[in-house]
Image 1 (tube, rainbow over the protein chains, first blue to last red):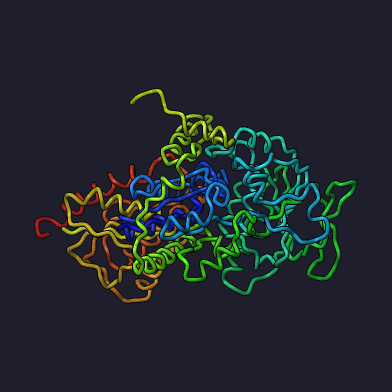
Image 2 (image 1 turned 90 degrees about the vertical axis):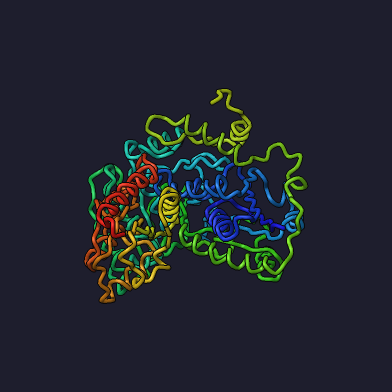
Length: 410
Length: 155
């Protein structure tokens, strides 16, 4: 009898896990369940619209469904549409790979005022996530707090001219928002020294291609390790780049102390410098890119406790480890986890009840892989001239597209 | 003539392409497909033709699964004289300065140790319009034909 595995979350961690499981045991039944009507999670909604090369990893994930026999159950919200207990009783193993989508807050005075936004929320809005709110007004001088690749993604997109977004899948509204932003200056600010920033040097260097910006690096200092030296080299390479209308300034070793406001509007970020001085950096809005945390959507602590016990419950990717590591790091992680799961399953008889009928029956809004293909077909057909895809950003429209049978026969 | 496909991968894209090439050649040849991380440098065999698929990661670096292989080869005195290979690179032109440096490094390392490269080193651009397999499958067939003429009837 074949074991049946449910993976909650069809993002990169869940997909890499399904891939590894089915590579080792092609006969397994693997179901990927996602709260969204569409698969691929962070690849679709986190990776920046102008990084299509990175998004191309989705082609691998498509094969899980097309060749390896995994099934997709989209638009299923675990905890609401299906309970954890239902999943546990139906499947031989349940894996939570739901990611960590919440923006970590600054934890300083006024960090919740209007004008302070999370980078994850902005990234989702830029990527046309159906649950993202509208893109906010950042004013002419946004400040990004954070020294990781998410901060770089945001500054790059804010700094790009319209012609530099050609070939991306940035939506019409998002394109207009960027074009009309009126931004004149962007500050990227971090607590750590430049050499300890988490930026990938290659992401920093990419900023040196932008044609509409003027980049300045404040006091990068020195590095005493190989990684730090590479990063400082990358920062030095872009220092002084360009004479464009949007000034980008990197500031290091500034610890945020409070958000300064006037009549409810953000006017600056008060910081303490390495020398112990108090300084206010003027800005019209603040985007926090200082890491991700649990949204509270799933009882993560309880699930992680079960994953640590003998129960056939597992956790993968950021949901398990916390918000560290790249997409390939999650691939390596998934391969290790797949081996663990298979070793556990080898010692237990399969339940043998195909769960689809019991759990997903009578739910017309469940989107299967064929439904996703219909959504994708419409997105690809609806792409503007210089876009590779015209994303459907509304959940109801996605469901409608998934249900729609093409009238043209082959 | 036996064919061994070796791949260096970080995200799995090169592995997928290597498997596609294996599937395409499988009917006509004895083909194996191995991750470079599982391939000891001492295993090269002159009677086998090597098709190598290698990506690039980070700032023009070799992908993780190729790094131990490259380190072992660079560290050792191993001679690859009499070994024939062809190589295909995967990269992303968003990072134009180091585009496809992974496959370039690997090709140089192999030839520096005496292996003979057959044909050019075609590259796929993840930010381009082509699918990797549309470029790599014709490349593999051409490379195998070239190798057959080189290996001659002795193989």
